Length: 457
Image (tube, one colour):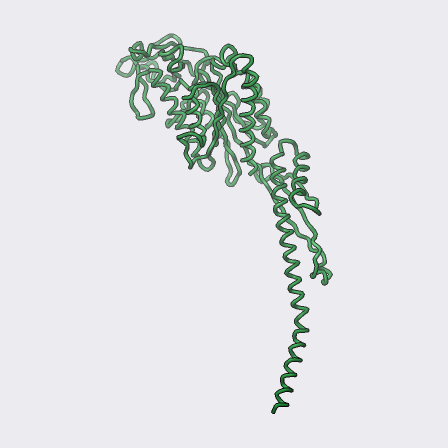
């Protein structure tokens, strides 16, 4: 019995060794396969990170030309991949909507350690591709050309004319590229360059032709429809221009408004019934700062002219007893009952308010805020608003922060796109003008960088 048991034990051990000898190569092969697959995975991750970085770099530098953008993309790829980096292929196709793309493709050949014993797996190619689409920019620039911008006042015009052409040069002026409009305002507002592509030289010419004169009709139409598509409230003209671009389903579009002013908006636009012979008259009214040299008078202004002043009323203690003037002949507006018109209807609560500069200025601010909020909440593409204020009017600065939905504003709305407000101290005098030009150019360049970053994300 003992001999029998010993014989069986020896036989089992011999069989185990044989099985182990047969299985060992397979175990080694699987272990080696795991190591090789791990190396392939690491290389794939390197490629993915590298092509993504290269793609974004190429996109961010497209304004410098495809040659420069392509070389910078290659440099970024190699810096991210490290030693032994393959040479990526950089191309610049367009998507179905004609929007510019940057495509980066790279292949790395990985020499295997264990899989190489099978000749066809000695070297395994690993590839990755990244494609970035540059969004279409649809932007309206809204610029103040009121009288306070002149060389005899704060020199804002000179600084603006230097900065805006440099600003728009950052964007794609080629056929099928970005689309930019320009609206200006003083006592009236006009579309000086309609949304178009290419947008230059129209924008540069419009900036050069700006002539500072008149009041500050810088508001929006508010909660009511815009009253004129050519001389309506400037913020609403900007909205109208941006909305004129048809956005196709799935198209990558960024909408922007850039708004510059050197003071607090002080004019409003409404239609008035002024008697059977003038049943609907468009009037811009206000035109003075509430505490300015021309206050407390409310001026009645031709919406089609930056210089035509139809007349004014003393809005001090008499609350515009002389009435609203509605044409160049000085005609006084009469309501349907024949009474002198001394009030306007406020959008804030629907009440009738006397034509005083304090009431008009408050109404202008309210309408601007409502217009800006409507632009920021548009669907499917909301608008990013950037504002620039020249001067030391803290009330105007607070309003401009709110219009931009600047995160530093106490009225910041987290659920709406955040823009930014830029403050420029003063351009008054030849010494300050040089500094002002630098500061204003820096503000515009910062906005350009922010817009371009959104276009390329």
